[in-house]
Amino acid sequence: MSQKEEYEAKIKAIAPTSPLFKNCLFAFLFGGGICAFGETFRHLLMRIGLESSDAFVQVSVTLIFLSAVLTGLGIYDNIAKIAGAGTLVPVTGFANAVVSPAIDTKSEGWVLGVGAKIFTVAGPVLLYGVLAGTVYGLIYYAVSLFGGGV
Amino acid sequence: MIHTFRHAPGILTAAAVGGYEERRGPLGEAFDLCDPSGRFGQKTWEMAEEELARTALNAALGKAGVNAKDISVLCAGDLQNQCCASSGGLYSFGIPFLGLYGACSTCTESLLVASLYLSETYSEKRRLAAAVTTSHNGSAERQFRQPLEYGSQRAPTAQWTATAGGAFLLDSHGADVLITECMPGRMINSLILDSANMGCAMAPAAADSLCRYFEESGKKPVDFDAIVTGDLGLVGASMLRELMKEAGIPLEENYRDCGTMLYDEKEQDVHGGASGCGCSASVLSCFFLPKMVRGDYQDILFLSTGALLSATSVQQGEAIKGIAPLLRIQRRKT
Amino acid sequence: MSILYAFLVGGALCVPAQILIDRTKLTPARILVLYVTLGVILGALGLYQTLRDAVGCGVSVPLIGFGGVIAEGVKKAIDEEAFLGIFKGPLTAAAVGTSAALVFGYLTALIFNGKPHKM
Image (cartoon, helix red, strand yellow):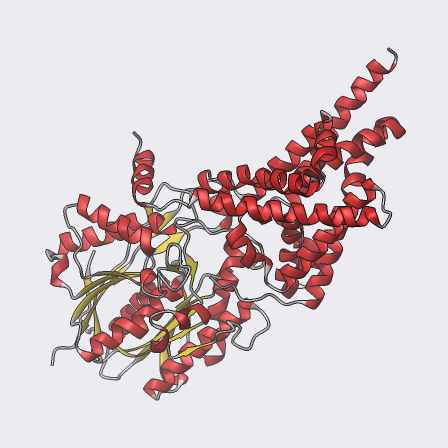
């Protein structure tokens, strides 16, 4: 065993671990709760005449708005302490990841602070989402070129 | 190597300043001043830390009834990039300045350098030196972790950067409490990369310093009223006990860690305990020094512990190095 | 009924992320990258659409949905504009969510100041 592994084993023996079951339960409840809220709202929107696809987008925008307000009021991070992945995985977590650096960096100015750093946390999601989409696009395009004639 | 001061400088006065969580903690009452808003009247967290440093030094000067121009040298440091809390907060005193960085070991480092300065320039004429160390949760989170409003869970081993600072005035002609010995720490590679477990990144360095000290001095842990580490926290302190046991010099009941004393484990959601260079500075100032002045303690070893890392070094896969300079602080014999 | 499904599926999708946070060294940012990429893959395979029809917001609200609409957008753009669609698709589909987050983020920064961190 290397010195590093030896020390890591020692750490493992004394360091407390997160309460996995409790954390997963809260993640499930909060994450599920946010999704159920979104679904309820979507049904309401469809009842007043929105098309299904528009209602999905509208729900996302509303959740992003609510997350921004809760982040601004300093509440979102307090919920996240309990909810963990339950407030990270829903689109509200993405919004929080954009809004929190914006508030945090306004002391450094509106252009080089907020402007430059607004994507410090959420940027990876956007980059890798677009990259994955492009890879799929290339494959889909190639398939449609060769498969199109069939 | 242990250095024994020929003219041991005395700690004339000390002041501790804190924020919201520090006020709620078990030592809250003992702080000279706490601002629950954490802002100290400033617009940004970085400026708040500057003001914290300024307030701490002013309080220490006020207690001693001395003027800033009577201070020969100011040794100060903090966790901000390029130590801007110290320079921004303390430039206006006009005291010749030595800026220091030892991460969270800066409190001991600044006292060590100030003591060496006073002992080297010792003469009939009384000289004073100041040592100031600060950390701020807001500026540290922003610099080392993530935006303050970002929702996340802290790991159980993660420590809480204290919004706190300590200022000390040292007197070349001694005081009730004297700094009698010092020993700079070696940088010890902890081999770990986990910045959510700084205690275990620093424990090997504290063990190294303590082992070297006991070996060279021939003393034992029980010879001291307290052996105090800076901010190993709950996990790091257990690790240090473990490492010392392995080294054949087990620590006894008199071992204390400032990181486990600043907050209340039951009342506050502390996780791994407190950290930050203001942690050991404020606990020394508002807990250990008053105990020594009262005579409860005669002789202590004080080692602030530092984790030498930056956000970049961790991302680039460099293991965290620890450091733990050591001071022996004794009550003047009467 | 779909509200219950949304609750169960949405909640269940958060659990693997929680396990990754607690038991691995993966940071939240990496986990979100995983989810988005997974969403793109599900969308590419056509599974995302099937799931969304069944559980609605249970799959569209988690970040998998963000990946899912990116895949959908890419497919639509390529069907309409051939090669250029590869580049037009991803951000067109992600536009609403991203713009909303940016605009609300900016407005929030205008109105609110950071609060001190509490334990």
